[in-house]
Length: 112
Length: 214
Picture 1 (cartoon, chains in turn purple, orange):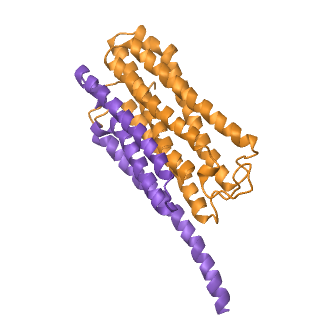
Picture 2 (cartoon, one colour):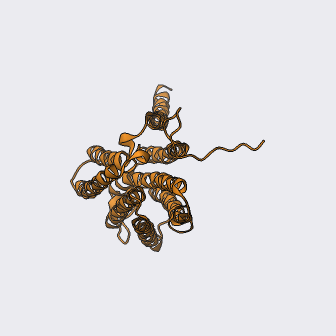
């Protein structure tokens, strides 16, 4: 809980903030460097998302103090992620629906 | 009946956190769904597209095979660094208040606002370059996704500037003219404003590789 930090704890945190900044800057350079490697879209997406997740984790964990936050905040985020994943599944299902209906059309024409 | 919700910075016994903090996290959860919906639409459109970005490289007759042939990666990388730096200055402004150093708070919050303006100026150059090549949101699906996602993010940056500028200027009366109780409230406000600002940084961390580099 960030609001109950003592002066000594805040001073320690300031050093951590600077280290996190350095890590984020290095990871940004790595993100750009990796994009110039000749990956196909699949591996490129996975590598880019892994680096983005690490960077996002650093920002949320240290700058937003999520690492030491109360359970209620974690629950808010867990519920949010569940809803987010459901929404992504809905969108991707809609795409596969579209492909299936195209397949049915082709099969229907062939059978007819 | 005059019902008032008390503004306290002490954690509630039932939630374990103060109301402002729970409130901002709930707001950020709704923001995750807002940007998440647009990201989902982006994935949907991209998976369904025959070619992506599906347009010529500006000033050539060659078809672009990657987004970075159309968008400016150096400018976007610069903007990533600017936002990361502004997240650090934001958290340092909060830490300065915790250390009771108001001058440093003003310095770090001022830097946060300047960096945010820097981000918008770079973004304006980027947009200007696109408009100069007659590339608009209506041109094609790729540019529609690019302008909507980065435009919505830029609106969030603008919102952050307004809030942070208030806490750098007139809002500081709460600290300079207030007692210890008011100072604790002001520090709480900066923490909450900081949570919003870090979220804006967080969104960009995902926008940058997915829109510009893939």
